[in-house]
Image 1 (cartoon, rainbow, N blue to C red):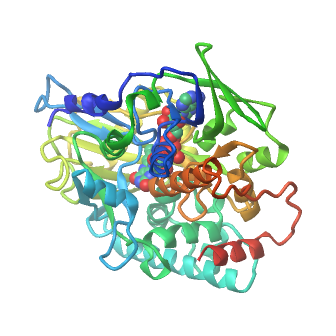
Image 2: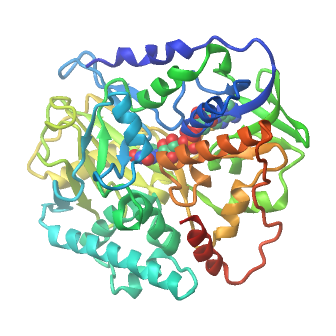
Amino acid sequence: LPSSSTSSLNAEVKNQGDNTNSHKVLILGGGVAGIIAARTLRQSGVNDFLIIEARSEIGGRMMSKSFGSKSKGNGTQYTIEQGANWIQGTQDGKSAANPIFDLAKKHSLKNQFNDFYNSVLTYDATGQVDFLTTLNKSEDQFAALTVLAGSRIDQGLVDVTGRTGYSLVGAKATDPHSAASEYMQFDFEYAQSAGQTSLIAASWNNNYTYNVDQGGFSDENNMSVDQRGFKTLIQKEAAEFLKPNQIVYNSTIKKIQYTDHGATVTLANGLTYTGEYALCTFSLGVLQHDDVTFEPSLPEYKKEAISSMVMATYTKIFLQFPKKFWFNTEMGLYADSERGRYPIWQSLDHPDFLPGSGIIFVTVTGDFANRVEGLPDAQVKAEVLSVLKSMFPTTDIPEPLDFFFPRWRANPLFRGSYSNWPPYFSSDHLINLKSNIGKLYFAGEATSRKYYGFLHGAYFEGQAIGTTIAGCIRNTSCPDLPRIPQITNSDPYQLTARAIADEL
Ligand SMILES: Cc1cc2nc3c(=O)[nH]c(=O)nc-3n(C[C@H](O)[C@H](O)[C@H](O)COP(=O)(O)OP(=O)(O)OC[C@H]3O[C@@H](n4cnc5c(N)ncnc54)[C@H](O)[C@@H]3O)c2cc1C
């Protein structure tokens, strides 16, 4: 399907603007957290809110794009996903429902099970080499890692890095095959390496989404191949309740002034809006990067929390060729002598996804993704083609018809892809990241303890904060969210264990 239909999708709530600049609640950002917060306010009888969004559409990091040559190949353009692509942890019939999967069903989103680990061929610099046994072993090693994290919580042991955890379970990825296999388990999920990531947080983040025995949804991932774009599900949801005068587009906020009585935001064009309450849903990266200034400046405990969590980078690099010359599996795993160098390949030209499209993409993460962002397109393309030549030494690799990758880190509306929890970020920091300052509230994927990084994390956070703000407005309940002015404890993971126990 051509992707021309994507632009008309949220026409029902588009560009109507606002007729007053004073509201009960200002919702800053129209991603999943902002939209679900708005829906929750409305369900609670609060209708006087305004969503202020910098882009021309709803969706935030659910961002699609038309890709493919119009004049060459099969002449068709396809909708590809620059950001979120998978419903991660669907539902196994008995487990809790991932609300994103529910929305996908409700809005008839075309999505397809993606068999990452069973439909894969493996490669290294010499071409196709079977190291599937090593890949399977790395799945077991990751499972052992999560068990280790659980037992360390039970014993009140300090958090360590995922790398230390791997060592403790006897997993040492020292050669390219085992390093690539570990990468597919770990970096492909967290967008950073095991050495940069908290063992305990990575484990619960995994379990609460994928492990049914731990309250997760299921271990399956479905990929959106909907040619209206994955964002369709949140745009359609918004169209059901949002009135045109409840959102303004193309409105970049530069300043947020807050007092005990509310907040005033100033746009890049000088326009101002005031709200008795304000909810900031900007990404952790935006907050870290000072793209928006706060007056007065945020308290120290808040700044410490914001700067201590990491906004990681996850970059998909898309190529379209005149015709498919690669594997017939869904995935290809390439083991370079440099860990993380163009490792995870995924075929969209597959019967289950976009057959006949000639499209393949490769994902890079973390420091390597940051490096790639800093390079010109031509250099990245040359590097990627040289890897394909190594993987398919007997194939004459043609010039791609189209080539694209997004630069999430450079984008001032995101400044990275999604958050990751480093080992020095404590449970108390998370409390402070989430805490309100008077009538200024914060929510987004990064404030989710269980599901940070995920769409469903943003969803649940939007829902929870919408309920809190509605309670304040309707005078039913208005507790200050907890905050810890100085994090002094030397035993933070005792607190983590307690906090998780409290949530269950
Ligand atoms: C490459 C990539 C792959 C991903 N893959 C998956 C996946 O497969 N599955 C999954 O579950 N999750 C995935 N995620 C994560 C998921 O996309 C996010 O967790 C989720 O979309 C975050 O929603 P949010 O509402 O918290 O933030 P956002 O989507 O960032 O929403 C914030 C909004 O604020 C707006 N904004 C920012 N600054 C300003 C400003 N100054 N003025 C006005 N508006 C502003 C932005 O435009 C944006 O619309 C991925 C993310 C990326 C980038």
